[in-house]
Length: 283
Ligand code: GUN
Image 1 (cartoon, rainbow, N blue to C red):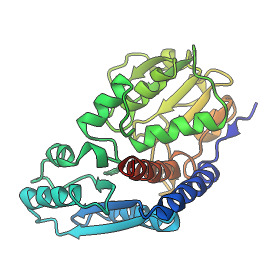
Image 2: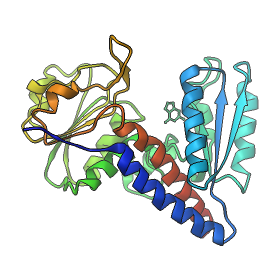
Image 3: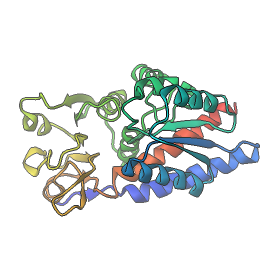
Image 4: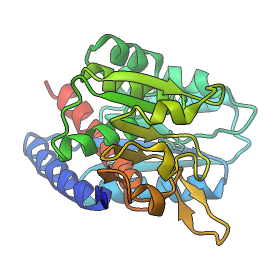
């Protein structure tokens, strides 16, 4: 059996067309959805990420501002910028790109963002809203994974989902989203003694560790759905995920590739969250 590939680029294109349509509808009411992206320092990967985010906004008819600061920016000055953006009516979403320089307390900065503009979904208020099923913003990467499952019409009720990784940005919110859809959820991590014993029971596996070949074909139940959140480089410098794609593809029912899988969905869900923030502000 060869797994179906879930194409993150194609799904993103479809969702971004919907975003563009909703943005047009808001514009007709005099509101242009706006995202502020704040970058501190010159981390090369961050520079690429923020450029892609700003471009995605432009392509979908969203207003975006990119604020770039020297790595020497003080925490107090960054907090003051966040406060100004909180009070800016043209801005509906605020994203402070991580990592921040070591002298800045990233959590303090995230908590300074108004929860109504927290389109990254990293604020404690957003985490609490997700945990309790209240309205808020879902972190973009796990939210994108949920959209991928939705796109194949997958009903999670009663299914066993195994999440590998327990980060605040992916693993933990992913588990809560799967739980909300009535899956039985197991979170595995570096202290899990027998990962394979867990993944072999799974109908859905989300790999979000940041290490190559965390999931190999012998660890997957035939027909399982495998979502690969990893972004790594192989020995040849090529982008690869956490999953041994070529091997697992022979066993799984569905699989997401890297690149072209979960990656593009993350930015797409940022656009969706920004639009949602603007729609909420317009009511
Ligand atoms: N750094 C890497 N990914 C992300 C993300 O999704 N949001 C923010 N704010 N920083 C990041």
